[in-house]
Length: 297
Image 1 (cartoon, one colour):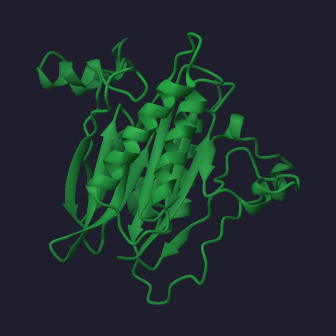
Image 2: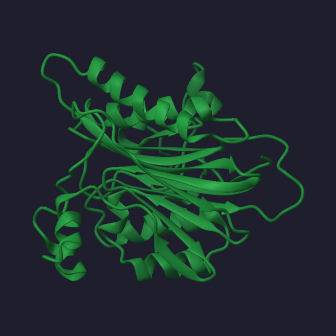
């Protein structure tokens, strides 16, 4: 199955460091929202991206592949966080997987980052938050409107790096020809309603433009948290892109800005310049470090 995608991340208007990280490279697309502050949350989310990036370039990924990434992430966080340092991360995403001769989305989640699917004009939240508020919603003690204002809405019941074995939830969904997935951290859903998200996904065809616009809208609403979005489509074009390029978007009218992963979010794949001794490529602070891509899988 061929996919096209785009991604965007920003530290927001309040936070000093971007603890989000994202992976946008077939067959896996995910976001990770770190917890614990600088040198803790940002490290935990980066570890998640690094472990899942080992699947990049495969034609598909199995549930065993994905679960092994969760296990390695959890183990590395426990190993690297020493001398009382504490941190963890959410992980939410989707992998392209083959099952019974067909193509499927293998959706996975730990924490309160989310995966949505837009299909046949309808937006559906696939993942279920692992949070105190979600448990209150499930028990009928809270309404959705009250949940958005609840003082404990960010208290998680599951995360990677908390000392417990990883307990991801999985969903296997047949991939439809018009499917569009949105994978996002709670910095987006904190600022935008599902209706507002659906309007952007339905009105903007290009996945890069859609992800960047969603992040921009969240910033305009206050940007009280780090915010990241990955939009993935089932590709409809016939000719695949010849290579996977990772070229940060530039906007000269916004002035020069050096991409700093501590501030602007760890991403994979990275620009080639980041792997050499050359200076980073200038990019605007609110742009995505990963342009829209297509995958011939």
